[in-house]
Length: 69
Image 1 (cartoon, one colour):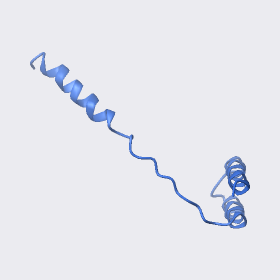
Image 2 (cartoon, rainbow, N blue to C red):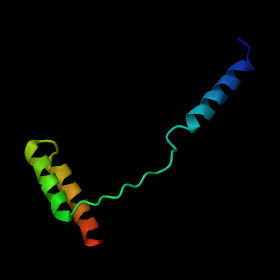
Image 3 (spheres, one colour):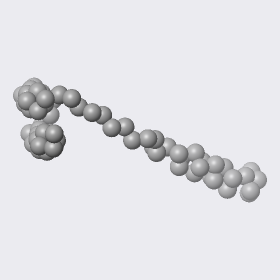
Image 4 (spheres, rainbow, N blue to C red):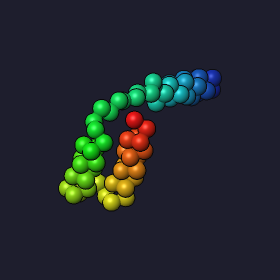
């Protein structure tokens, strides 16, 4: 294989990979009430969909957002 072709291919791969994952940031508005969020979190914990650690973290975040409304 031509020695100048290898660096060109490597450069091309780097350029293609550099564009991955840099898309626009999406912000979602959550219009649920704080009570509904707490109920949903508790249901997820009770059903085993999340661990106690995950629940505690999500609850802290939800409460912080409720305080800023």
